Length: 130
Image 1 (cartoon, rainbow, N blue to C red):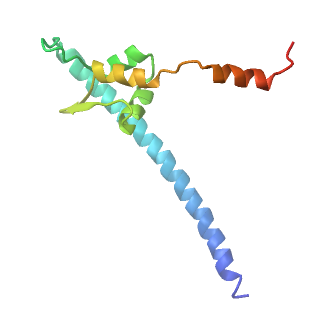
Image 2: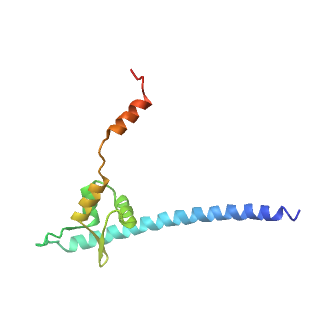
Image 3: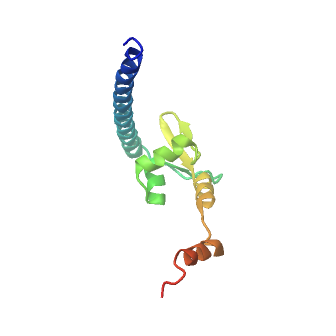
């Protein structure tokens, strides 16, 4: 019987570990939502308080809402790409900014060009689709 005790305990521990992982993930998602809400609030406060003049040197920094508008994507989507480093950004004080040049570079890196390979693969999937 003593040989089965560690197996029973490990199953019990594994179940508790799985519950803990699930709770941590739920907490992480909640914190991410809170972070997004706080950043949106900060952007709203700072956006109303100042008007950003264009730099004469061509440095065009975009706020997160401006990046979202340019891309037509949600703030969560943009923040995820910034956190992962896919979209380069700078932090000035408490504000995250993306240069227009960096955003354009990101878009260029994401561009896809249809290839003959894709079309030939599709025709292989449906060789007699008439």
